Every structure is written in structure tokens, then in C-alpha cells.
Amino acid sequence: MGSRKRLIADQKKEDRKAWYGASLHRYPTSPRKMRLTADLIRDHDVTEALNILRYSKQHSARPLEKLLRSAIANWQSKNEGKRIEDAELFVQEITVDSGRMLKRVLPAPHGRAHRIMKRSNHVTLVLGDKKEIIGPDAEETSEQEAQPEPGETEQPVSQ
Picture 1 (cartoon, rainbow, N blue to C red):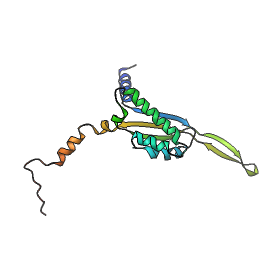
Picture 2 (cartoon, helix red, strand yellow; picture 1 turned 135 degrees about the vertical axis):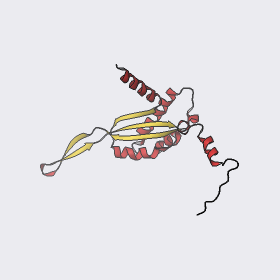
Picture 3 (cartoon, rainbow, N blue to C red; picture 1 turned 180 degrees about the vertical axis):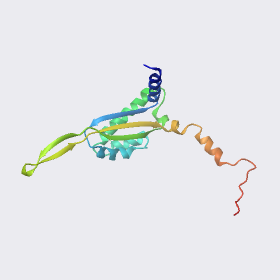
Picture 4 (cartoon, one colour; picture 1 turned 90 degrees about the vertical axis):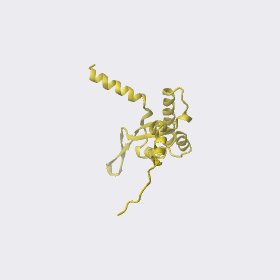
């Protein structure tokens, strides 16, 4: 392997260490129905998202709940010394893509045939940490910007 490929491979490994998520492939329901449920939990805290999925009546809520639990378990395996409650995890990104379609034929009147598309989808869920995204110094900088320095007074601008 050349040095350039090795550098790119090492960079991908480092990026993968900071990625906390899970994916579900070839789930046999239409992507449109799955997106309706996925939109319910996007940008919510993990505990809120689990509660939303647990009490949802939609068929696609069960596999998404299982996927979210898998993503939480992946986060725990990479951060063994931390607690979920302290981490402030939330659903940062959830994407639903179309999978393969099984094409079937249904007999119709007068010797014709209607096509039936049995759709499937792929779901990718990524967790984020609010503390890592915002950063620990974000609160201090916003407080400093809000207060003017001593000796400065705001003067109205005359036209």
C-alpha cells in the first residue's frame, strides 16, 4: 500500500472512532413510511426518542427503537468510563434511503398484468453529544460578548 493510501486509511479510522451510530439494511417496508417515523425522533434526546418510539403505533417504530438501542450500545462500548445521562446524547442524524425492490406481477382482467413493487429501505442513525458539539467554552464566550467593557458606552448614531 502506498503512503498516500495509508494516510487516507488512517484518517478514515480516526473519523470512524468519533462516529457513534448504527445502521439497518434491507428492512422490508417502504422508505416513505419509515421516514415518517424517523422525522419524529430527529434532533431529540435519546431518552425522549426512545419514549416516542416505544409509544408510537406505527409499524416502523419497533425496528427504529431497536436501531437506537444498538447505537446507544455502540456509544457505550467506545466510551466505557462515561454515563449516558452525563453525555447528553441526541439523535444527530437519521437517514432513510431506498433499498432494493422486489418486482412482482399481479394478474389483472383481460389477460393483463399489474406490477407490484415490494420496497425496502436502509436506515443510518448517528448519535451526537451536545457537549462535544457546543464545546465547554461556548458559555463563557457568549457571556463575555454580552457585557461591554468598562469605559465603553453606547452612543446613538445621528443621521
